[in-house]
Amino acid sequence: MTSSRAPVRAIIAGCGGYLPERVLDNDALAAAYGLDTSDAWIVERTGIRQRHIAAPGETASQMGAEAARAALKQAGASADEVDLVVVATSTPDSAFPATAVRVQQHLGITRGFGFDVAAACTGFVYALGIADSLIRTGQARSALVIGTEVFSRIMDWTDRGTCVLFGDGAGAVLLRAGTGDGLPSDRGIISTHLHSDGRHGDILLVDGGAGSNGEAGKLRMAGKEVFRHAVSKLASVVDEALAANGLRHEDVRWLVPHQANLRIIEAMGRKLKLPPERVVVTVDRHANTSAASIPLALAEAAAGMERGEGRIAPGDLVVLEGIGGGLTWGAALVRF
Image (cartoon, rainbow, N blue to C red; front, side, top):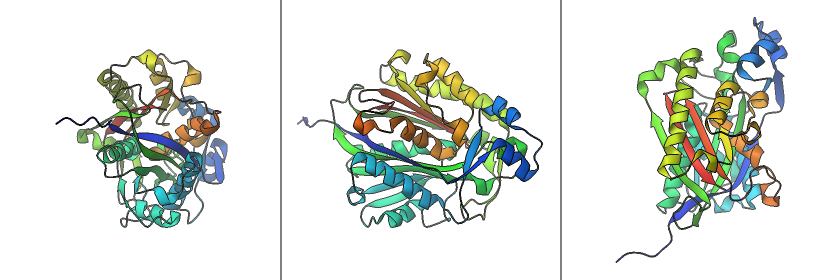
């Protein structure tokens, strides 16, 4: 007998972000670490003007919990209703327990379950896909999906090619189970598309253990190689996501990309034929916050959404996309 029950999908009910108090602009960065660079050099090549740096002792779980509180507030929800926490991070508080359970502790959550996802800068898209799947299969009714990073603690501050690129921060969304007709017009996460290719693992990596307590290796990157893969792979996965759902470039209202480099972001906007004002850009102020960059940008674009004041409005089709070490890459289509 065929069930007539409407299919379940995850709906983004609230978004939130958190940035550390300390702001380090390009000139101050160059002066602090004796780098042979300048504001003009960094802006021309990356679009980055400043980044936020975590305070001593400030951890990925603390920042993630702050972003989660903001997402819960926007959704008009309490932590008591959360039964799943998924944290994407490359700078966990410790090898174990998972940063997600530390977030549970900070929020006073004593039910449900939590775990971490390690997919570098694509981590939030991976975590979103996993949480969506768990909601669709009934394992959870609500979920906090968080990206949180303290990349300042895995930087080689003598390497001009990497240390100017990254910053610290956290972003989060609250997902709730909803129903629809199983169509792209339904509100919620329409689909996620995830990829990895370990043959390219050595072009972006941390050369040791990682943890936001400072006991870590350092980030190493072959920048030209990463850039080359980013442009082709991001274009391909966005086309894949749209084709899978019978959608066209012109159906997309907003692009919320991983905030790695302004040139990559602008190239993706042109690919989708979106005017610049419909591409969400925060890289100039936040730098690359890895797994936190997409939810931070989403939180900014959705700020005031519950009052009808957000840039993103109900019914808008939004593309999220990112690429990171692994290589990993992926995209998600979301209807707000």
